[in-house]
Figure 1: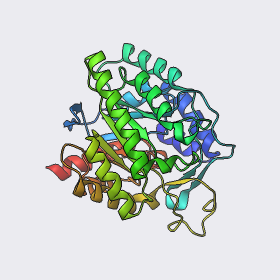
Figure 2 (figure 1 turned 90 degrees about the vertical axis):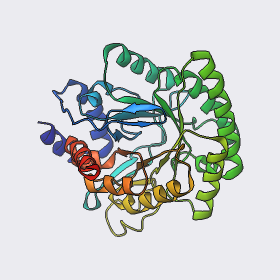
Figure 3 (figure 1 turned 60 degrees about the vertical axis):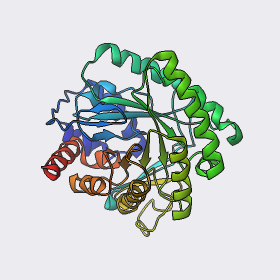
Length: 337
């Protein structure tokens, strides 16, 4: 039934399909139990290494469904302090020939308070499910020089309920957001958030790891500068990578010229390169979570070989369904045995 529903959704406009799926998933008889592949990362115990990347469930509306699919962790968001509509439609496009998606959603979400109500309800009604990360961003109306204020608001509100928090500074669909990856801006942002994390940890007697999500489009020099900042502030982890602005792999295909971030198959190689650079220059105490172009279990194995501790799927899940979760988990278990 799930396979039929997925194939049907791929025949209708991308964002319509996305919204229908989020609404319908909690109602479907989804149940998939995977063999355990436990690992401790950032002081957290993951039941397996397969996660859902941020962007699919922006508001935490399908948490009960993800819990039944076998994910080891699920990242919800990106969420902002205030609700916002995002960019004008249409803003999501498929390139099926390359198993790719282009989106320029623009952090459309119902706000941090709405997401946390959903997360709190999930916590009350579910035990033993996947770990939950909350991916945070800034509102479009917030000037870039005040972006830290938005991240602080979301950090303070999400800290108690989230298992970890991801700082999204790499979406290409919010004006000037990627400038926060620059050395000085990144230092100021991460210093402030780490300081607040210390205060919150004392207040709640709970340590919630902070992770930053980076873009695949930085030069080697820019990436190395970001790494130095991440090391200096002793961040808890890094996700590599977000979507790309490159169209080198999709030239000539329908929708290839649409503005926005490209994800899926065309990102596989570049995201693996970034993961390798990150793991070569970061200490073991700052683990890397791989995202970008994981379309099958072998892609996930390559990410682990490059040094990642965990992997996240999104576009591969859109095209491959729940079978991809099982395939990734199996291939990772086989690789380790």
